[in-house]
Length: 468
Ligand SMILES: [Zn+2]
Image (tube, rainbow, N blue to C red; front, side):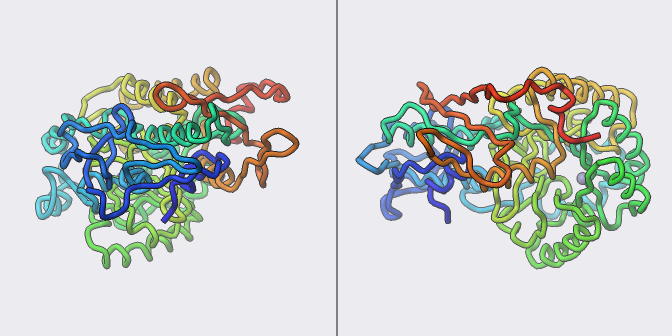
């Protein structure tokens, strides 16, 4: 189990100031919901006088309960537990990992997945709207983007800065080359019709110079021809594994999961894929140790429109053991078009803006299966145009998922060292890293990335990853 000092230095790559956090003793605390700063909902162990049993009750803010002593900071809650309970979605089912389908669970879910392939979208979407309607009324996690886990870490960093009697702390900026935020575009190939459309979709992405990944279902649904896999590789696109057979049952039962994962890992080696995404974003992060992949892309930020509710409440990559999670932070094309019935990019733009405000990772899922209709294709093209504009206007880094994974791992090994009276970054890959500062603010911290005078102003061409 990580300490809070380790958790903060891992996330921010800042120096450990030698101030230790102390949480409540196990016997003195209760488990429930509370706040740590305005609207920063936590679930976990606390010795606060009042703890809510459900997130809908009034929640007490424990931020003011923090006490400072020389060399240590006394918190009224177990902060590591609170961060992990958000990222691992344990707040949903009071401490346990869960497979929660809301109105769709147990036998009815099994039945639904048996008949689902027979149902046309025009019928399926009405059923899905009925299943998902109660979720859209849920206040927490907050739709359409939830940054609670990130804001909790920022508030803890603020406490740390204050405990040192400082106003700021240096850290290694989140993205390479000083990019403001990052984006990945991913395509899950669901059916044979999707397979047939992959080349056209590659043309579309290439027209905007957007790199993307294709997730392939290895069994039952279709067989992806070797020529298509070669085409992905030759054109600079990325291949990842998408579930095993996409029957919605990957995480139903542990023994069966372990049995399936062996085959999934073998397909990963066969495809030379470093990334994995489960079917329909079903997940159980407690079982991720069996997955032999470098990164996973199956955890939604806020899962109101996905079969399994919850959400990891972060727009940042985070480690689950050895696997790096690249969370799904925007609405997928299917629910946008068929559940909400919208063919505009307004919601995507709104989500992207909120993610960029937090300097996070924009991750897009669009399916070759659902982009064949002309108005769907036009909407998707508009989204690509928007991303390309942000690349030049806001220095957004649009990269392959594997590039984001590689970078996050490089950054994770870099250290800030104080030499000759100034901070420097040390470690392999430091050339692309930048020093930023987190400053104390009224309500947490704000970030500043000083302009590097030595840097030549980069043109749009060089700012846009190594693709093409
Ligand atoms: Zn899928």
